[in-house]
Length: 410
Length: 228
Ligand SMILES: Nc1ncnc2c1ncn2[C@@H]1O[C@H](COP(=O)(O)OP(=O)(O)OP(=O)(O)O)[C@@H](O)[C@H]1O
Ligand SMILES: [Mg+2]
Image (cartoon, rainbow over all chains, first blue to last red; front, side, top):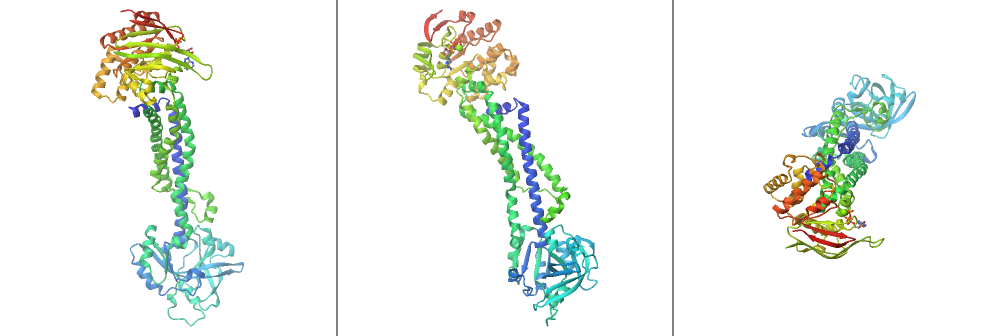
């Protein structure tokens, strides 16, 4: 009986009820939209970082992380690579030779990190070959080919076929200059990354690093890093455990780049923040409407208590009116929000207008909306909680009426 | 059996500010099956007395026994339950729940009492018939005339089989034809179901049909007349 009464009471003033339902639904939609946007941005940042910079798992010489000294090479990386590639969870893996140095053209010089890559492996791992905007990928047609980024090209005023000089410290600690020719210009969309890296073939780099030494055997074997891309990011810890003792220190992307872990953890509460803000604003609307609904029914509420409806039932009735409000509004907002997220998740929101600043932070210019699954239970909980909280005072107001006074106000 | 017994009931409104002495020692005994009108000039305390008898308000002094229960001993919540089970109310206006149909209004208190569905349906049909509104079962109050609304209110008051029915000026908003009609129904229910009625009124035609007339003046009973 009380639920029927509450439901019908809700529709006594349909306009007012619909306005409030609309406001709550819009709030739910906005929370979903903002969560979808923020989660999409964060995921794009994390994915870009994983795709281009960290991969999911990396292996280095245990001391390499300390000062990135070229001498801390991995022991027989090729052998481990073969073993790693057999792991079911591994999608792609590649060995890299790394060196810090200086690149210079006639117009200027910059400090950079040189990545010596096996082109085919790297293409499979990071898709670098897809990022070439001018020229070609490393094709190995000639010796000492180099890939530089578009922003680096601008800074060095270099073009395809421009000759650049790399100065590196070799394994003997000697500074070794070498001439490289630009064959391709890449653009990953991650500005900090682009400005700090150049790519050469690992074979060329290994030769350069052993330039002054007697090392001749096993030159091809030199490598500092094995980067591994997995089928799924969630397997990172498992794979790390599997590869433990594979001849080096194994780290997941969270360990390599702690900011990624921070962002990942942020993703789990952005929705709560947005929901809290929006629901707080809605609370005032619900309190106001419910209070109005109680005050304009003083006589009727007095009559109800007069003829024997007890305070618990009256209280429950007012609460139910607010809960029903939420029960209608939340699904409406969810439906609206889910369709928006679905659409913007599939086609993305194009923010090319701001792509320069987005790239500065390593994010893509198209944001694909995404919401964590748990948002779908957070929303009903928040809307329900808000409705209940907002109805408490009006319901209390209703039961503190004395029937005789209410009835007398004829 | 006494259904209502008051002893030296007083009521002072605003005792702290400007006190209003609404009742000044009312002794009243009402027995089962009576059909009593409380009359008196405006402000004489009729509504105050009915509210106190009905447990809607508490007296400032004196004792009220209803259905053998001293209602001063009941908490506010117990009073609500007491009213639900023992007292039927017909107010002057705003009697009915606007979002419920006539039959749902009649059924309402029985639902609060958790009566069975068959019992409720039977009683509703019987009472809607008794008040001559069998054809208006599914109308909402706003779709009924003032007289019809008061008849639904009488049916609603009777539905839970209370010990007595209190009605404060039930005909005040009705035209003479509706007044006659309502009184016919009340009289018949009084006779057929032996239902005790206590009502206040200003209307001479209503007073004429009462079997007992209690006159209040300045919060005291000045005349108590039986016409059997
Ligand atoms: N809530 C109240 N606060 C203060 N005074 C009140 C209150 N209710 C009633 N009174 C006063 O108590 C006295 C009795 O009022 P009551 O309503 O019982 O009279 P009544 O006989 O029903 O009058 P009427 O015929 O006009 O309905 C009046 O003087 C009235 O002004
Ligand atoms: Mg009165």
